[in-house]
Length: 100
Image (cartoon, rainbow, N blue to C red; front, side):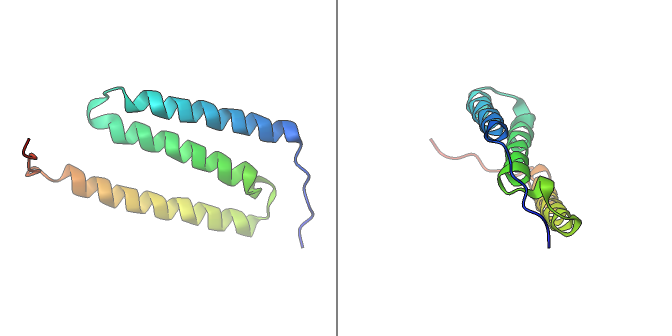
């Protein structure tokens, strides 16, 4: 089996600080208007935060190759789902306006 890897507390604190900064960036981006790029910016930040959590808090960074394959397959599946969703949303030219 694999060996246990001891992660120093300072690394966990740095990753935590990065997650806090990215969360603050998420809040700032929520109040900014990027036009059609709003979703892309928000999802980019979310995927970055998810990657940090998977790599460091779930210890995938120090795991074997099989774990990397399954982690990559999860992100590939996420990409497929997001691309299908974006293709559907972009192709709609009939989006109704909500009554006020």
